Length: 159
Image (tube, rainbow, N blue to C red; front, side, top):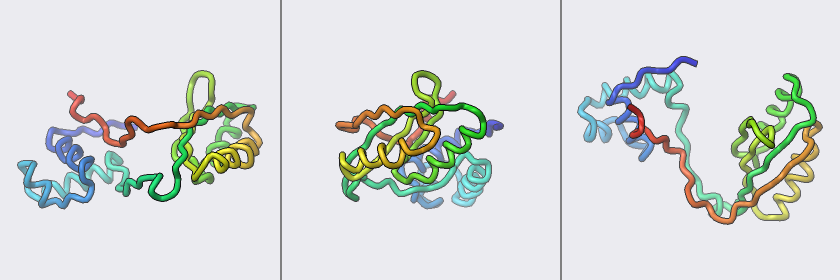
């Protein structure tokens, strides 16, 4: 993966879009000394190059009935390429899994899971996750309170 060169204007655009992804090019031009069309071209370039991966609405899980979040450490029985691809495809088909990371350490994968309640978490782990043929073990940690949760990258720390 090649790194895209970003100048200070690109970083300003990204910073402001992280604050408000619905900001118009004209609104961004009020804070950045570029024209709206220049900002639009820069955003398009960053979208095409994969710097900007998309735009999403941030929902409050509790307000839509998904009040239990958990992290699961998953260990697999086998680690060959076919097994890893099979596991990745299986996880991709589980909407309760919001994030999945391959990891080094005690677990092979770390999952972030969201469900309506504790019985739903139990059912998900026992009836879906543990039923995947490659899964050897699952250790779950239930989140009591989210202290910090963000998708905003620390762009100000870049040189």
